[in-house]
Structures are given as C-alpha cells and as structure tokens.
Amino acid sequence: MASILPGLRRRPFGPILASVMCEKGIEAMSDDTRTRLVPAIQAARAGAASGGIPIGSALFIDGALVATGHNRRVQDGSVIHHAEMNCLENAGRLPAADYARATLVTTLSPCDMCTGAVLLYGIPRVVIGENRTFLGGEDLLRSRGVDVTVLDDPECVEMMTAFIATHPALWAEDIGENEPTP
Amino acid sequence: MASILPGLRRRPFGPILASVMCEKGIEAMSDDTRTRLVPAIQAARAGAASGGIPIGSALFIDGALVATGHNRRVQDGSVIHHAEMNCLENAGRLPAADYARATLVTTLSPCDMCTGAVLLYGIPRVVIGENRTFLGGEDLLRSRGVDVTVLDDPECVEMMTAFIATHPALWAEDIGENEPTP
View 1: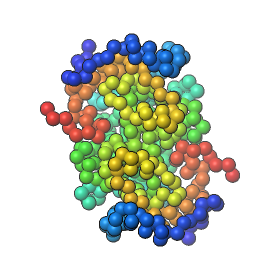
View 2: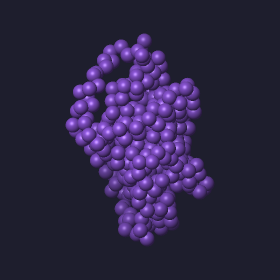
View 3: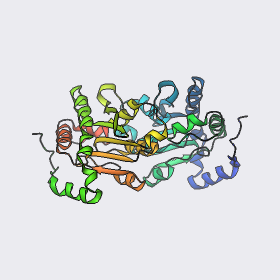
View 4: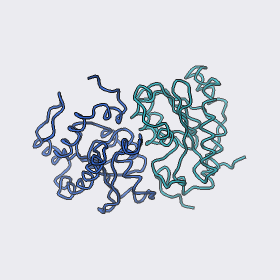
C-alpha cells in the first residue's frame, strides 16, 4: 500500500462515485469507460519503470485505442511531454474530424498545458483517473463544452500519492511550482 | 509584398500601436521589447526555410535570450511542437523561479495549448508579434495575471498572411480546424 502524503486525506470512494453516476448517468461510469483507463495506467507504470513520473494517457477514436503516452520529463529532459501531450504526439498528425470523435484518457487531472491541448484540437471527451493529488483545468474544459468524467480510481490515487511523497521536488518542477521546503 | 487572404482586411497599424502604448505605457513598446521579437522572427524564418509553418518564439530570462524555437509540424510530424512549445522544450528543465523571471516572445498570438503552457509554468510576460491572422488565448492569459503585449508587427502579419494563403489545409490542421472548402 502506498503511503499517504502528510496532510492529504483520502476521501471515501463510494459517495464520490455515486455523485458522478448521478451527474453523468450510469453509462458514463460503465465498464467500458473504466476499461479505457487500463492502457493509461499501463503507460504510467511503464513511465515509472523507466525512472519517470507515473502519469499515463491513452487516446481513443471511435472506441479504438489509437495511442498511449506517458510523462517524459525525466527520460527525455522534456518540459512539454506530459502524459497527455506525449500521447497526442504519439498519435501523430490527425485531421480535426478525427479529434472530434476522440476521447483522451489520463490517469491524472490535466494541467493547464494539457487542458489547452484538448481545447486546441477540439477533443470532446476527457476521462480522468483521479484529481485528488492534483486538480487541473477541469472547469475550463467543462466551460468550453468538453465532457469530463473523473473516475476517482484508487490505483491512480495511490500511484501519484506514493510518487509525490518520494519525489516532491521533481513533482513541483513538473507542475511549475517552487520546490517545497523540507 | 505578401498577398492578403480573401476576407482578411489589413487594419492600419498606427491606431493600434497608439492604443497599446496608451494601455501599457511607453516602456512596454520600447525598442527593447521590439528587439526581443527579432530572434523569434528569425526562428520563424528558419522554420519556413525548412519547409515548415513560419511561427517562431524566443524565451528571455532577466533580459537574456535563453532559447528559441519554431513550429515543427512539418519537419517532425509534431502536433505539440508549436513554436512556443518548441522554444520551452529547447530551454530545457527550469525551476519555477526561472520561469517567474521570464518573457516568452512569439510571432503569433498563442493558441490554447501554448497559452496553457505559459500558465502552467507561471511565465509572467508574453510578447506577441501579431494577432490579426489568429487570435489565441490572450484574454485567458490576462485574466490569470499575465502581462501581454501585442506589437502588431507588419513583418509577422505578412509572414502569416502569405503562409495561410498558400497553405490553408496545413494551417487549419495546425489550429485544429477542419480543412477549408475551396
């Protein structure tokens, strides 16, 4: 079991799932939606296995998996290859009509940059593993008409919680914040 | 002289410059600010010379040029290396304290993705060559406290106007829009 960050209190999952189901309808929380999180988690695990930040992403078009990606700050010294960006890059050049039928899945709530990429390409649906350890541009996405589903997945929460506890300076750098004081 | 897109009317430069000067103060439109546009334009020209989209960017920290970059959609098949993103990537991994003293210069108004990157890294100043051919997330930047200066530079306008007229499908792809009908 991953350790929990000091001050980070785990909320019970049940009521949150229920509220999402109520808001989005049962179909938004279907097995299919949860299944789409699997390749994103696998990408995050692969990123962690190669010494990187454990955030992964997957792009689906018409329900088919098109690409996956993970954060590459450590592996490539990259400041723009967040998981979602890396996934979009791996998917390659696509016409707007393809993005318009896409779902971008990410293990963690997308930061401002990744939020902007979703808006630029007009991706209509975003599925988020969790937003407890970091809350990105979800409100902006919704305000621009993007369908946002937060799965509040325990595996995603524990993956990030453990990482942040053991790599606070690297995490701060990745989200453009000052290094935390010990 | 570059041709002007059908329906794209060139506005006179004088009144716009005057209004910016009035809004930002003379110092914001100083020779120093205009000088900072030069490496961004050079990067845009280099991108065009290698067959790409003519948008360039430059990052300054404490007034010193740290990196330049240009759009690499054509050259690398990249969907995330817009000019500003490529410039940030070329600058490498930086602590938040460095971004906090930075100015990002771009020949063209930043799209949603590049706007988000500025917000993620807390870059406090953005200098824009022109926003006549494309208007990006300037309002969002200002709403989040970023100091935005639009130089309305004729060279930047003509560079993009000529490119859009000759490469409408490529331009549409770069900003996530459907290919224009002939």
